[in-house]
Length: 105
Image 1 (cartoon, rainbow, N blue to C red):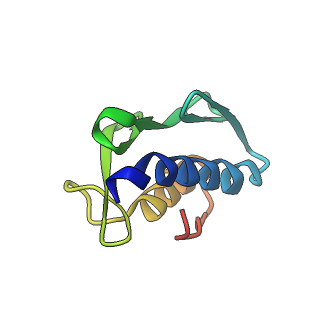
Image 2 (image 1 turned 120 degrees about the vertical axis):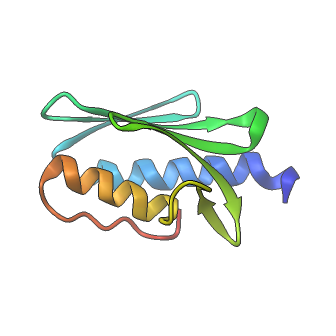
C-alpha cells in the first residue's frame, strides 16, 4: 500500500474538499496538498498531506492531529474517531449544527 499512499492521500483530500465545499457557510480553499476551511467566525481548520510520513495532518484551534492509514481508513493513535468523524465534529462545533461527512474519504 505504501506505493499507493500518495494517491490515497490525494483522493482523501479531494473528497474532503468536495464534501465541505458543499456547505455554504464554509470557505474552502485547496492548494499544494492541503485543504483550508475558513468559517464565518474567522476560525480556520487545515487538512494537509505529509508526504514524508504518509500521513494526513489536521490543524485546528485545539491543536494538531496526525492520521495514519490503518484498517482501511485514516486513524489517529490519540483519537478514537476516524478522520471523517473527527472532521464532522470539528465542523459541527464551528457551525453550531450537525454535519456528517461521508466515510468514503
